[in-house]
Amino acid sequence: MAKEGIHPDYREVLFLDLSNGFKFVTRSCVNTRETETFEGKEYPLYKLDTSSESHPFYTGTQKSVDNMGGRVEKFRNKFGKIALSSK
Image (cartoon, rainbow, N blue to C red):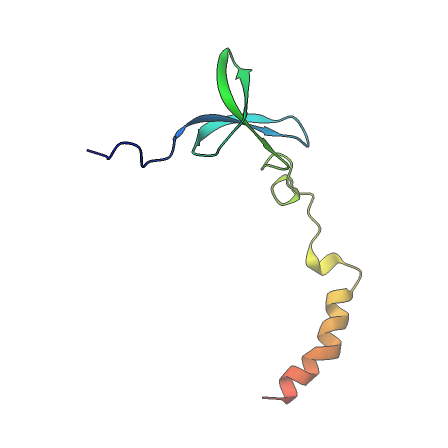
């Protein structure tokens, strides 16, 4: 059996993405101060700045490093030759 009083409070928590209002429930130990009702049940509420619903990497809107105005190519041209000659 597990010892009493040493384990964090692992329970269902409502996460709210502040950038787009997306909400989801999952189990977590995160400390919360607020609660909110979601789908007829009250949950502890944790507010996020971003989630998979709004992060550019997951939404496909992230810019590729190679499409940054040729900066990567300029860097390779300038420093690539130095790296090869020092070997």
